[in-house]
Image: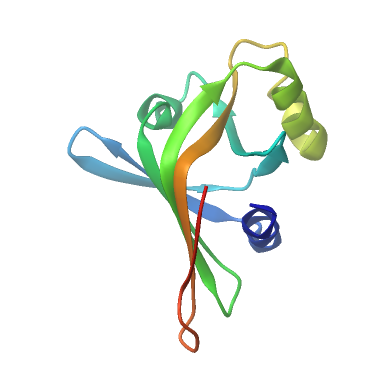
Length: 129
């Protein structure tokens, strides 16, 4: 999981795909955190993306200029204040909008996930967690 976290962190921006009814939705994200063995993203509970992603299958994709990563899995909301604090401590610029004690702050972790690293020059590498 560390390899997946480091790759996403290096890319900076990734794109998260969700489903809204029968319509796919894709958004740029920039938050990623590894906390207590789980890979997390962050958003606000009032946002459509939270409603579409919480408890649902999603996929994210990012590209570092040579390789790309597709990470598919189910996102699970975690109300653990320590997980929220860990995320926000790593992204202090978000503290203007979010706080670990604010009920709107959401951190979601991946479960039943499959990460696929791909490039045009090598066989794909698959990691499940």
